[in-house]
Length: 134
Image (cartoon, rainbow, N blue to C red; front, side, top):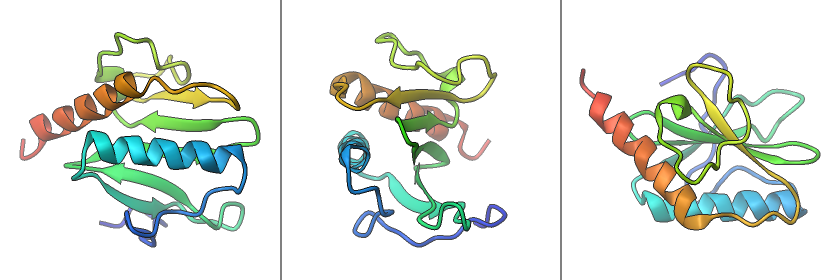
């Protein structure tokens, strides 16, 4: 599948390159939690461009689950269909106004609610599977 300028270039065995600081560590931990939540999730790298040659890691299973992006002051995990997911733990703290996406911004030193994050990943996969083939 080609999404206009997207490129495959990473797999779970060779993930997208992350910054060598706390952001890289955070992205690595998020990557591990996504795979723990859904071992069938596939990671690809998409949207490579001159300003971001490493691209954006994207996790998919029967459709997009989420993307992981690093910024100067945060790591953003954006759930493609987050507006349709229950978030009882209140993890979503960004992109709250849209009708489709929801995101979680992680800042340096913040703890990850691992159980709640894995529940969101599983819910996103369940939503994708429920819509597959329709």
